[in-house]
Image (cartoon, rainbow, N blue to C red; front, side):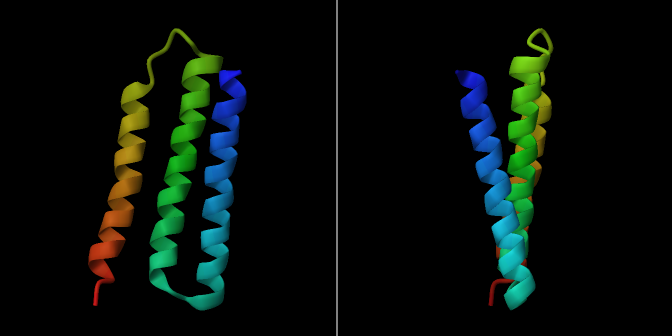
Amino acid sequence: MGGIIYGMCALTALLCSSLLFGAYRRSGYRLLLWSGLCFGGLTATNVLLIVDKLIFPLADLSVARSVVSLLSLSLLLFGLIWDAK
């Protein structure tokens, strides 16, 4: 059951990322770019969670997941600060 939830979370983050990138291409509003990059990283975090918990249950990828999450959220924070007017 956990695998289904992990997969749905990854697909949701991927959908959000693709919608944000599509909106960025249409409007050119840079905050959409930073948000899309953040959700792309969150998609990678969810994929790492699937790999960690389901494919290699004996491996501990929690540090890698945390680093990817930190980088993703740092991109969004950088975009919020950089594009502030």
